[in-house]
Amino acid sequence: MEKTAFPRRFLNEEFSADSLEAIEAIYTDLLTREIDNPDSLLAWCSEWSEIDSVLAEEGARRFVQHTCFTNDEEITARYMEWIEKIRPGLKKIMFDMDRKFIASPALDSLPTEKFGSWIKSVRNSVELFREDNIPLQTEESKLDAEYDKVVGAMTVEFDGETRTIPYMGRILQETDRDRREAAFRVIWDRFGQDNEKIQDIFDQQLQLRHQMALNTGLDNYRTLRFRQLERFDYGPEQCMQFHDSIEKVILPLVKERAAKRRESLGVDQLRPWDSSVDPKGRSPLRPLEGGTPLVDGCSQIFGQVHPDLAKMFSLLIDGDLLDLDSRKNKAPGGYQYNFEEIRVPFIFMNAAGKQGDVETLLHEGGHAFHSIESRHHDLIANRGAPIEFCEVASMAMELLGAPHLDVFYKDPAQVTRARIEHLEGVISLFPWVAMIDSFQHWLYTHPGHSRDQRTSNWHAIMDRFGTNEMDWSGLEHIRSSRWMRQSHLFGVPFYYIEYAIAQLGALQVWRNHRKDPDGAIQNYRAGLALGNTRSLPELYAGAGIKFDFSQEMLEDLIGMVREEIDSLESSSC
Image (cartoon, rainbow, N blue to C red):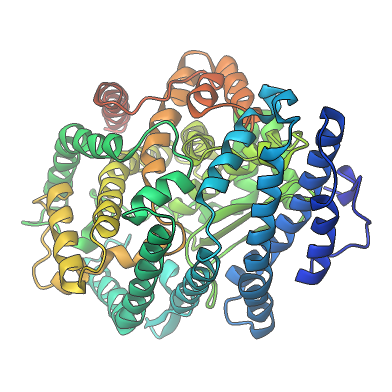
């Protein structure tokens, strides 16, 4: 997409957000203006949004480069400059802007449909702002960058080659059980080398976050974080109830599938290195070995779901907005990030030739479509959405794309197998989300806990949501550290329950699609196009689904997943 598709209307084209001084001068002009009537306030908001978009893109590009090249000193220095110098100054400026906005006597004249969600968000931000928290947030971000650097630098020696941690996931899918065990142990031995470093990072983050809560006049960080995440439609109690529902509804099915896996593998007990291998002893699914590149294949899948999706994905291909391969000194995980001024998405991931890479790109592609469908909103605040709905966009695309995996696999049996594995992943997601979310609720309501107490609580959570089919004997030190690979704990605290909530939304989109493909896609896209102009329940309704993570909804949708797995398994016999 050419930059001129959304040209600047207020800022000079030569302006660059490369220093705090230049940025302050722009905002000072806005802060001194009169906005006491509807026309002046509307014009002021439009200019503010454009400036925010330019700054958001500058920060995004520095972050993206940092995650792509964690060892590049110049890139790191630019990212640290943003974290340490520019962003802290921006936080104070943003507070002044927010306060001026909600104090305008013309505020009530703004149209609710366009400004209602934004006004609610700004009022919340003003109530939570404390200048004392700015340096703490800066340190928190620096520690997250350090975590990325530590994990991104991890490599292991295997088969006489230096391999990244994501690549080693391939070995865990191989049929040779001894090789899988060797791979598992070498991965976690490598993590063990940095265990203390990662624990130190996390200890510091916990202390910083608790102090932020105290500075805000709150007892614990959980209360602060729920407000920061604008969880206006549910709270900690509903999350705890969801954990209970997952335990009652999902765990029996997880245990049933684990027992079936153990029997198929012919082992007395499952070991951690038995989770990813095909239980029937078939070679790992390797989607790229058929000759179709990952990007080309996913583009074809998007096109089969709906031709417009392939057209949207081409914006990323043509715009060089993809960094997909795993390599040393690249941050872990995957994400989609918006470049807000030019209004296009960027996708980052660590592909290693596994079936999971296809699912990840379909997932991040769903986020990208959300970004593109909502880019028509002139206010930057309306181009986002609550995470609980953003993840519907991505998870639904995994489900909608799964029937078209014949793009990668010419053997129908492999397509069926890939679909079963994906649906098993949908099931297993819920207990893991419950583990991570339960862990965070405990962490932040028990400030000052020791590492031993943290480990003990983590063990209790794993016992609650795990399965007795899995034997961890002799691996207790690894079991104690599994949470350290979940980067969300370090970079985006409390952002994880959204995956399970959104999975229920995505399953509803899939159910609608099975009944009425065209209507489901039309509703899906209509929901994405709403951006952030509606409440969370209204966004779900706009996509033709319900915001509901009750036990009844969970039972209904997981029953559908079970039936689909049974049907696919019957067809493959």
